[in-house]
Amino acid sequence: MPRTSPLSAPCCAPQAEPLVLPAPAKLNRLLHITGRRPDGYHELQTLFQFLDAGDTLTLRRRTDGELHLSPSLDGVASEDNLILRAARLLQAETGRRLGADIHLDKRLPMGGGLGGGSSDAATALLGLDALWGLGLELTELARLGLALGADVPVFVHGHAAWAEGIGERLTPVTLDTPWFLVIHPGVTVSTPAVFGAPELTRHTPPITMARALQGGAASWRNDCQDTVRRHYPEVARALDWLAHRAPAMLTGTGACVFARLETESQADRLLAEVPEGWHAIKARGLNRSPLHAALGRCPSPPPGVETCPTCRRGADPGA
Ligand SMILES: C[C@](O)(CO)[C@H](O)COP(=O)(O)OP(=O)(O)OC[C@H]1O[C@@H](n2ccc(N)nc2=O)[C@H](O)[C@@H]1O
Ligand SMILES: Nc1ncnc2c1ncn2[C@@H]1O[C@H](COP(=O)(O)OP(=O)(O)OP(=O)(O)O)[C@@H](O)[C@H]1O
Image 1 (tube, rainbow, N blue to C red):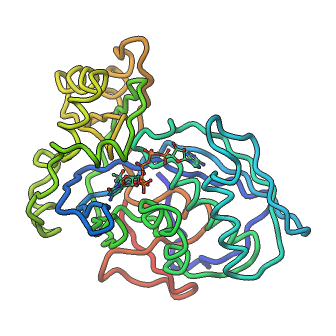
Image 2 (image 1 turned 60 degrees about the vertical axis):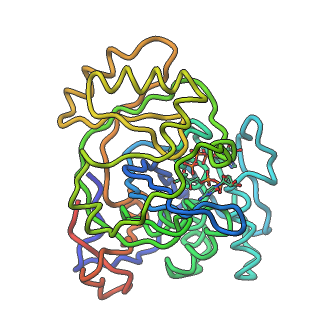
Protein backbone atom coordinates (compact mmCIF):
# COMPACT_ATOMS: atom_id res chain seq x y z
CA MET A 1 0.00 0.00 0.00
CA PRO A 2 1.60 3.30 -1.03
CA ARG A 3 2.06 5.93 1.66
CA THR A 4 2.82 9.61 1.37
CA SER A 5 5.82 10.92 3.27
CA PRO A 6 5.36 11.02 7.04
CA LEU A 7 4.91 14.53 8.39
CA SER A 8 8.41 14.51 9.87
CA ALA A 9 10.06 13.95 6.46
CA PRO A 10 10.27 16.60 3.72
CA CYS A 11 7.54 16.16 1.09
CA CYS A 12 9.33 18.14 -1.57
CA ALA A 13 12.68 16.35 -1.90
CA PRO A 14 14.11 16.48 -5.48
CA GLN A 15 13.63 13.20 -7.39
CA ALA A 16 16.39 11.26 -9.15
CA GLU A 17 16.17 10.89 -12.94
CA PRO A 18 14.62 9.20 -14.79
CA LEU A 19 11.26 9.65 -13.09
CA VAL A 20 9.30 6.41 -13.33
CA LEU A 21 5.75 7.29 -12.40
CA PRO A 22 2.42 5.48 -12.20
CA ALA A 23 -0.73 6.71 -13.95
CA PRO A 24 -3.40 4.78 -12.02
CA ALA A 25 -6.83 3.84 -13.31
CA LYS A 26 -9.99 5.23 -11.70
CA LEU A 27 -13.40 3.77 -11.08
CA ASN A 28 -16.64 5.72 -10.82
CA ARG A 29 -18.08 3.93 -7.79
CA LEU A 30 -21.29 5.97 -8.17
CA LEU A 31 -22.31 8.09 -11.17
CA HIS A 32 -25.46 10.21 -11.26
CA ILE A 33 -26.39 12.54 -14.09
CA THR A 34 -28.24 15.48 -12.61
CA GLY A 35 -28.70 17.80 -15.58
CA ARG A 36 -27.46 19.14 -18.86
CA ARG A 37 -25.63 22.46 -19.31
CA PRO A 38 -26.38 24.89 -22.15
CA ASP A 39 -23.12 23.77 -23.86
CA GLY A 40 -24.42 20.17 -24.01
CA TYR A 41 -22.16 18.80 -21.27
CA HIS A 42 -23.87 16.91 -18.47
CA GLU A 43 -23.77 17.76 -14.79
CA LEU A 44 -22.61 14.76 -12.78
CA GLN A 45 -22.29 13.59 -9.22
CA THR A 46 -19.70 10.87 -8.93
CA LEU A 47 -17.43 9.08 -6.49
CA PHE A 48 -13.94 8.62 -7.91
CA GLN A 49 -11.55 6.04 -6.53
CA PHE A 50 -8.12 4.97 -7.80
CA LEU A 51 -6.90 1.46 -8.53
CA ASP A 52 -3.44 0.03 -7.91
CA ALA A 53 -3.27 -0.76 -11.64
CA GLY A 54 -2.47 1.57 -14.50
CA ASP A 55 0.00 2.90 -17.05
CA THR A 56 3.60 3.92 -16.34
CA LEU A 57 5.40 7.02 -17.63
CA THR A 58 9.19 7.37 -17.64
CA LEU A 59 10.42 10.96 -17.89
CA ARG A 60 13.88 12.28 -18.73
CA ARG A 61 14.77 15.96 -18.94
CA ARG A 62 15.93 17.57 -22.20
CA THR A 63 17.59 20.96 -22.23
CA ASP A 64 16.67 21.76 -25.87
CA GLY A 65 12.97 22.29 -25.15
CA GLU A 66 11.87 19.37 -27.35
CA LEU A 67 9.18 16.90 -26.33
CA HIS A 68 9.40 13.30 -27.51
CA LEU A 69 6.87 10.61 -26.64
CA SER A 70 7.28 6.93 -27.42
CA PRO A 71 5.70 4.68 -28.46
CA SER A 72 2.83 6.29 -30.33
CA LEU A 73 -0.70 5.06 -29.59
CA ASP A 74 -2.77 3.40 -32.32
CA GLY A 75 -5.46 5.78 -33.50
CA VAL A 76 -4.16 8.78 -31.55
CA ALA A 77 -2.22 11.43 -33.50
CA SER A 78 0.84 12.61 -31.64
CA GLU A 79 -0.52 16.18 -31.30
CA ASP A 80 -3.72 14.77 -29.75
CA ASN A 81 -1.97 12.60 -27.18
CA LEU A 82 -2.95 13.96 -23.79
CA ILE A 83 0.60 13.52 -22.48
CA LEU A 84 2.09 15.82 -25.10
CA ARG A 85 -0.83 18.23 -24.80
CA ALA A 86 -0.19 18.40 -21.04
CA ALA A 87 3.54 18.98 -21.58
CA ARG A 88 2.95 21.75 -24.14
CA LEU A 89 0.42 23.42 -21.89
CA LEU A 90 2.91 23.43 -19.03
CA GLN A 91 5.64 24.89 -21.26
CA ALA A 92 3.29 27.59 -22.54
CA GLU A 93 1.95 28.52 -19.10
CA THR A 94 5.34 28.70 -17.37
CA GLY A 95 7.53 29.91 -20.24
CA ARG A 96 10.12 27.20 -19.36
CA ARG A 97 12.33 26.14 -22.26
CA LEU A 98 13.02 22.65 -20.90
CA GLY A 99 11.81 19.55 -22.75
CA ALA A 100 11.51 15.83 -22.06
CA ASP A 101 11.78 12.32 -23.43
CA ILE A 102 8.70 10.46 -22.28
CA HIS A 103 8.14 6.73 -22.51
CA LEU A 104 4.61 5.42 -22.02
CA ASP A 105 3.96 1.86 -20.93
CA LYS A 106 0.26 1.68 -21.85
CA ARG A 107 -1.67 -1.02 -20.01
CA LEU A 108 -5.10 0.53 -19.55
CA PRO A 109 -7.61 0.00 -22.34
CA MET A 110 -8.37 3.23 -24.20
CA GLY A 111 -11.92 4.50 -23.92
CA GLY A 112 -12.67 1.93 -21.25
CA GLY A 113 -14.06 4.26 -18.58
CA LEU A 114 -10.91 3.79 -16.48
CA GLY A 115 -9.66 7.30 -17.22
CA GLY A 116 -6.33 6.17 -18.66
CA GLY A 117 -5.81 9.18 -20.92
CA SER A 118 -6.73 11.61 -18.15
CA SER A 119 -4.44 9.83 -15.70
CA ASP A 120 -1.54 9.90 -18.20
CA ALA A 121 -2.11 13.66 -18.56
CA ALA A 122 -2.09 14.20 -14.79
CA THR A 123 1.09 12.13 -14.39
CA ALA A 124 2.72 14.19 -17.14
CA LEU A 125 1.71 17.43 -15.38
CA LEU A 126 3.00 16.41 -11.95
CA GLY A 127 6.04 14.59 -13.35
CA LEU A 128 7.17 17.49 -15.52
CA ASP A 129 6.51 19.94 -12.69
CA ALA A 130 9.02 17.91 -10.65
CA LEU A 131 11.46 17.30 -13.54
CA TRP A 132 11.56 20.96 -14.51
CA GLY A 133 11.59 22.25 -10.92
CA LEU A 134 8.47 24.36 -11.42
CA GLY A 135 7.03 23.96 -7.92
CA LEU A 136 3.42 24.55 -9.01
CA GLU A 137 0.61 23.96 -6.53
CA LEU A 138 -1.80 21.09 -7.12
CA THR A 139 -4.66 23.57 -7.56
CA GLU A 140 -2.76 25.27 -10.39
CA LEU A 141 -1.92 21.95 -12.07
CA ALA A 142 -5.56 20.86 -11.70
CA ARG A 143 -6.71 24.10 -13.34
CA LEU A 144 -4.43 23.36 -16.30
CA GLY A 145 -5.57 19.73 -16.35
CA LEU A 146 -9.24 20.64 -16.57
CA ALA A 147 -8.55 22.16 -19.98
CA LEU A 148 -7.43 18.69 -21.11
CA GLY A 149 -10.37 16.72 -19.71
CA ALA A 150 -12.93 16.72 -16.93
CA ASP A 151 -11.37 13.67 -15.27
CA VAL A 152 -7.83 15.12 -15.08
CA PRO A 153 -8.22 17.20 -11.84
CA VAL A 154 -9.00 14.22 -9.59
CA PHE A 155 -5.81 12.50 -10.74
CA VAL A 156 -3.86 15.73 -10.08
CA HIS A 157 -5.25 16.14 -6.56
CA GLY A 158 -4.56 12.48 -5.89
CA HIS A 159 -7.32 11.70 -3.39
CA ALA A 160 -10.52 9.69 -3.84
CA ALA A 161 -13.23 12.28 -4.22
CA TRP A 162 -16.88 13.19 -4.46
CA ALA A 163 -17.12 15.18 -7.68
CA GLU A 164 -19.76 17.53 -9.02
CA GLY A 165 -20.11 19.83 -12.01
CA ILE A 166 -18.60 17.94 -14.95
CA GLY A 167 -16.24 16.31 -12.48
CA GLU A 168 -14.10 19.30 -11.55
CA ARG A 169 -15.66 20.31 -8.19
CA LEU A 170 -13.92 17.87 -5.88
CA THR A 171 -14.26 17.03 -2.22
CA PRO A 172 -11.74 14.42 -1.03
CA VAL A 173 -13.36 11.39 0.65
CA THR A 174 -12.20 8.16 2.24
CA LEU A 175 -14.01 5.16 0.75
CA ASP A 176 -13.88 1.45 1.51
CA THR A 177 -10.92 -0.15 -0.29
CA PRO A 178 -12.09 -3.57 -1.49
CA TRP A 179 -10.59 -5.68 -4.24
CA PHE A 180 -12.06 -5.29 -7.68
CA LEU A 181 -12.26 -7.47 -10.73
CA VAL A 182 -12.46 -5.23 -13.78
CA ILE A 183 -13.55 -6.71 -17.11
CA HIS A 184 -13.10 -5.08 -20.50
CA PRO A 185 -15.58 -6.89 -22.74
CA GLY A 186 -13.65 -6.07 -25.91
CA VAL A 187 -15.97 -3.43 -27.36
CA THR A 188 -15.46 0.31 -27.67
CA VAL A 189 -18.14 2.52 -26.16
CA SER A 190 -18.52 6.04 -27.54
CA THR A 191 -18.81 8.53 -24.65
CA PRO A 192 -20.51 11.20 -26.83
CA ALA A 193 -23.00 8.58 -28.10
CA VAL A 194 -23.92 7.56 -24.53
CA PHE A 195 -24.35 11.18 -23.43
CA GLY A 196 -26.34 11.86 -26.60
CA ALA A 197 -28.75 8.91 -26.22
CA PRO A 198 -32.35 10.18 -25.93
CA GLU A 199 -33.30 7.64 -23.27
CA LEU A 200 -30.34 8.43 -20.95
CA THR A 201 -31.38 9.13 -17.36
CA ARG A 202 -30.22 12.75 -17.09
CA HIS A 203 -32.37 14.24 -14.33
CA THR A 204 -31.51 12.31 -11.20
CA PRO A 205 -32.24 14.64 -8.27
CA PRO A 206 -28.95 15.85 -6.76
CA ILE A 207 -28.07 14.30 -3.40
CA THR A 208 -25.64 15.42 -0.73
CA MET A 209 -22.24 13.82 -0.41
CA ALA A 210 -23.15 12.76 3.14
CA ARG A 211 -26.19 10.89 1.85
CA ALA A 212 -24.21 9.18 -0.90
CA LEU A 213 -21.60 8.02 1.62
CA GLN A 214 -24.19 6.97 4.18
CA GLY A 215 -25.93 4.74 1.63
CA GLY A 216 -22.71 2.77 1.15
CA ALA A 217 -21.50 0.73 -1.82
CA ALA A 218 -24.61 -1.46 -1.96
CA SER A 219 -26.73 1.59 -2.86
CA TRP A 220 -24.40 3.05 -5.53
CA ARG A 221 -25.30 2.93 -9.21
CA ASN A 222 -24.29 4.38 -12.57
CA ASP A 223 -26.92 6.30 -14.56
CA CYS A 224 -25.20 5.43 -17.85
CA GLN A 225 -25.50 1.70 -17.24
CA ASP A 226 -28.95 0.98 -18.70
CA THR A 227 -28.20 2.95 -21.87
CA VAL A 228 -24.84 1.24 -22.34
CA ARG A 229 -26.39 -2.19 -21.69
CA ARG A 230 -28.99 -1.53 -24.33
CA HIS A 231 -26.58 -0.41 -27.07
CA TYR A 232 -23.66 -2.73 -26.28
CA PRO A 233 -24.84 -6.33 -25.72
CA GLU A 234 -21.30 -7.48 -24.89
CA VAL A 235 -21.18 -5.02 -21.97
CA ALA A 236 -24.58 -6.35 -20.82
CA ARG A 237 -23.21 -9.91 -20.99
CA ALA A 238 -20.17 -8.97 -18.92
CA LEU A 239 -22.36 -7.20 -16.35
CA ASP A 240 -24.70 -10.20 -16.09
CA TRP A 241 -21.80 -12.61 -15.80
CA LEU A 242 -20.23 -10.58 -13.00
CA ALA A 243 -23.50 -9.76 -11.21
CA HIS A 244 -24.16 -13.50 -10.78
CA ARG A 245 -20.99 -13.70 -8.73
CA ALA A 246 -20.59 -10.33 -6.92
CA PRO A 247 -22.04 -6.78 -6.82
CA ALA A 248 -21.21 -5.38 -10.28
CA MET A 249 -21.35 -2.01 -12.05
CA LEU A 250 -20.24 -0.03 -15.09
CA THR A 251 -17.44 2.55 -14.70
CA GLY A 252 -17.83 5.91 -16.49
CA THR A 253 -19.52 5.27 -19.82
CA GLY A 254 -17.83 1.85 -20.04
CA ALA A 255 -16.91 -0.37 -21.67
CA CYS A 256 -15.33 -1.66 -18.45
CA VAL A 257 -17.44 -3.21 -15.73
CA PHE A 258 -16.28 -4.08 -12.22
CA ALA A 259 -17.21 -6.28 -9.30
CA ARG A 260 -16.46 -5.53 -5.66
CA LEU A 261 -14.88 -8.34 -3.64
CA GLU A 262 -13.97 -8.52 0.01
CA THR A 263 -10.75 -10.50 -0.29
CA GLU A 264 -7.89 -10.89 -2.74
CA SER A 265 -8.45 -14.64 -2.95
CA GLN A 266 -12.09 -14.10 -4.00
CA ALA A 267 -10.80 -11.77 -6.72
CA ASP A 268 -8.21 -14.37 -7.80
CA ARG A 269 -10.86 -17.09 -8.01
CA LEU A 270 -13.12 -14.91 -10.13
CA LEU A 271 -10.23 -13.83 -12.35
CA ALA A 272 -9.50 -17.48 -13.13
CA GLU A 273 -13.13 -18.01 -14.26
CA VAL A 274 -13.35 -15.04 -16.69
CA PRO A 275 -14.43 -16.34 -20.12
CA GLU A 276 -12.00 -16.22 -23.06
CA GLY A 277 -12.24 -13.05 -25.12
CA TRP A 278 -12.68 -10.66 -22.21
CA HIS A 279 -9.67 -8.91 -20.75
CA ALA A 280 -9.74 -8.81 -16.95
CA ILE A 281 -7.61 -7.28 -14.21
CA LYS A 282 -7.64 -7.67 -10.48
CA ALA A 283 -6.89 -4.49 -8.53
CA ARG A 284 -7.25 -2.92 -5.10
CA GLY A 285 -9.18 0.31 -4.52
CA LEU A 286 -6.97 3.16 -3.26
CA ASN A 287 -7.95 6.41 -1.61
CA ARG A 288 -4.60 8.02 -2.37
CA SER A 289 -2.96 8.02 -5.75
CA PRO A 290 0.29 6.04 -6.03
CA LEU A 291 1.54 8.89 -8.24
CA HIS A 292 1.81 11.23 -5.28
CA ALA A 293 3.56 8.59 -3.20
CA ALA A 294 6.08 8.04 -6.02
CA LEU A 295 6.79 11.78 -6.18
CA GLY A 296 6.92 12.16 -2.40
CA ARG A 297 4.14 14.68 -2.78
CA CYS A 298 1.12 14.84 -0.49
CA PRO A 299 -2.29 14.57 -2.15
CA SER A 300 -4.94 17.20 -1.40
CA PRO A 301 -6.33 15.92 1.90
CA PRO A 302 -9.96 15.61 3.05
CA PRO A 303 -11.31 18.63 4.97
CA GLY A 304 -9.98 18.95 8.49
CA VAL A 305 -6.85 16.90 7.84
CA GLU A 306 -3.47 18.35 8.85
CA THR A 307 -1.34 20.22 6.33
CA CYS A 308 2.25 19.11 5.79
CA PRO A 309 4.51 21.69 7.51
CA THR A 310 7.18 21.38 4.82
CA CYS A 311 5.33 21.72 1.54
CA ARG A 312 1.99 22.91 2.95
CA ARG A 313 0.22 20.68 0.46
CA GLY A 314 -1.47 18.57 3.08
CA ALA A 315 -0.99 15.06 4.33
CA ASP A 316 -3.44 12.56 5.72
CA PRO A 317 -2.95 9.25 7.40
CA GLY A 318 -5.82 7.50 5.55
CA ALA A 319 -5.55 4.40 3.37
C1 LIG B 1 -18.32 9.98 -17.65
C2 LIG B 1 -16.92 10.09 -17.11
O1 LIG B 1 -16.16 8.93 -17.44
C3 LIG B 1 -16.96 10.17 -15.58
O2 LIG B 1 -15.72 10.01 -15.00
C4 LIG B 1 -16.21 11.30 -17.66
O3 LIG B 1 -16.87 12.49 -17.27
C5 LIG B 1 -16.06 11.28 -19.16
O4 LIG B 1 -15.00 12.11 -19.43
P1 LIG B 1 -14.18 12.02 -20.80
O5 LIG B 1 -14.06 10.62 -21.29
O6 LIG B 1 -12.94 12.83 -20.56
O7 LIG B 1 -15.17 12.72 -21.76
P2 LIG B 1 -14.87 13.94 -22.72
O8 LIG B 1 -13.86 13.53 -23.72
O9 LIG B 1 -14.64 15.16 -21.88
O10 LIG B 1 -16.32 14.08 -23.39
C6 LIG B 1 -16.70 13.37 -24.54
C7 LIG B 1 -18.11 13.82 -24.86
O11 LIG B 1 -19.04 13.27 -23.91
C8 LIG B 1 -20.04 14.21 -23.56
N1 LIG B 1 -19.95 14.53 -22.13
C9 LIG B 1 -18.83 14.22 -21.42
C10 LIG B 1 -18.76 14.50 -20.06
C11 LIG B 1 -19.87 15.13 -19.46
N2 LIG B 1 -19.86 15.45 -18.17
N3 LIG B 1 -20.97 15.43 -20.19
C12 LIG B 1 -21.02 15.13 -21.52
O12 LIG B 1 -22.02 15.40 -22.16
C13 LIG B 1 -19.80 15.43 -24.45
O13 LIG B 1 -20.55 15.23 -25.61
C14 LIG B 1 -18.33 15.32 -24.79
O14 LIG B 1 -18.02 15.94 -26.01
N1 LIG C 1 -2.29 9.07 -23.50
C1 LIG C 1 -3.52 8.68 -23.87
N2 LIG C 1 -4.01 7.52 -23.42
C2 LIG C 1 -5.27 7.12 -23.77
N3 LIG C 1 -6.07 7.79 -24.58
C3 LIG C 1 -5.64 8.96 -25.05
C4 LIG C 1 -4.36 9.43 -24.73
N4 LIG C 1 -4.21 10.60 -25.33
C5 LIG C 1 -5.35 10.83 -26.01
N5 LIG C 1 -6.22 9.84 -25.86
C6 LIG C 1 -7.59 9.78 -26.44
O1 LIG C 1 -8.54 9.89 -25.37
C7 LIG C 1 -9.60 8.93 -25.53
C8 LIG C 1 -10.16 8.55 -24.16
O2 LIG C 1 -9.17 7.85 -23.48
P1 LIG C 1 -9.32 7.25 -22.03
O3 LIG C 1 -8.52 6.01 -21.98
O4 LIG C 1 -9.01 8.27 -21.00
O5 LIG C 1 -10.87 6.92 -21.98
P2 LIG C 1 -11.74 6.48 -20.79
O6 LIG C 1 -11.04 5.42 -20.01
O7 LIG C 1 -13.08 6.15 -21.36
O8 LIG C 1 -11.83 7.75 -19.90
P3 LIG C 1 -13.05 8.31 -19.07
O9 LIG C 1 -13.35 7.36 -18.00
O10 LIG C 1 -12.44 9.59 -18.60
O11 LIG C 1 -14.18 8.46 -20.04
C9 LIG C 1 -8.97 7.78 -26.28
O12 LIG C 1 -9.90 7.07 -27.04
C10 LIG C 1 -7.93 8.47 -27.16
O13 LIG C 1 -8.50 8.84 -28.40
